[in-house]
Length: 602
Image 1: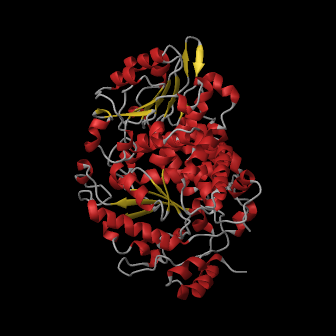
Image 2: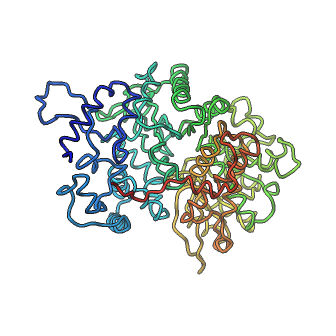
Image 3: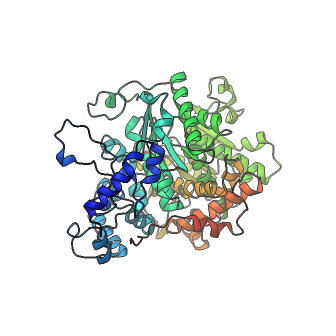
């Protein structure tokens, strides 16, 4: 019988010659429990005199210390007596054996002892880096409690305060230094990829340019692709494109981990992004989903328009936000009455989120009525930093605002716009907090019996108003939803539960639907299908509390429904390449979902 030492020498001698080739290296490094090459230890470190170069990818049998360091395969105290013997774990673990369920219970107990949300976030990230399956099981089973911890609103603060820390690669950093070599850089990641979330760090939530420190956003988004949508973590790749930063504090910070130069623009920026997009398609094929995340407005729209016909691309800030808001609006019709075409919409904020939502509302109205494009758009009004978006400003407006510039006299303030336009629905995407003042909410309430108020800006500090303010200032008549979570509010003896228009309702299921049907482009009809599927999941008993979004505890069921509806629309429009079409798309979606349950090892 081979000992651990003799096994190492035998395997090493067989594979060493093959490891010089990257492709062969990957195929040869699946050992016993499927260990990956990024878990390898450096060979003979203890014998190294400090000057002698060593080969960092020499392999060993997946056992002992190496196995416990693999987040994909580590089971902590759940290794059985037989597994501890077979994989040389004796002495490396305490003698107690905990089931995965008991580990989950213990970990949740420890997390709840942290009073500071940021401390909970770091504990969850530590768990993700050491025991992947336990991390996802914990998140799936306690999603309503832990979603705000691993993503909005805590992730933004984490990027600000901890973004400079780097411990181990959780994604790829691609910078201007890599120009001309991006295809090779992608090969440094050891997995075959199906979903990429990429940011350039210029507009991280409502916090501005965090440059390279924005990597927490794509990491967090992809953890939700897995936990909420069931996309396997091994096929997910977070990417940060580093073209510099305009954040002077970072440029002057000696510990900043990114490029210390002014943010590149124009041709230099475009060329790097184009090389990246080309390399992704070359390395992973035309069915890899690329999600753009937290790009500044001027780049977000341009990138979506440029690549939507040549790549499978999705912008969560534009399209994901639009989907989740439209889903909430369709659901809210049961409370406020009428159809979408019967309502008047006023937006505070005319950036990528606001105009993206407006466009999808217009498309849904067009689909359900005989109105023209112009007529449907005239039901939607936008207010930006200079006031109401009107036709007299058209020459100075950015292109994405121009379709919403209607004929009207100039109005400079939101309160005046509410009084003149008389909207039934008020939507905030400004990224500036406290803009829905008492006077604005009171004006909305004087116009409507049940004003729908959606304060969507993140994080919580940037929300246009709080849930308590909306319910109190409207005397309990408002239907309220926000981008960040708020606790239930009791007003005049009645409990109101604010809805959260969280993009996490949409993008995990949406991405799963695209993957499972083999789509190669995102059609607008897919977005409408996702919004309609989301609205259909709200339980009747929740409407009594003013809830317009389904409970997050059912998120995997919601994601499977959205995935099925998106895939069905793709098959209907002839845009799905995975044939034949499954007979039951919901069950097929559920069968595709990743399970974080521990596996038994031989």
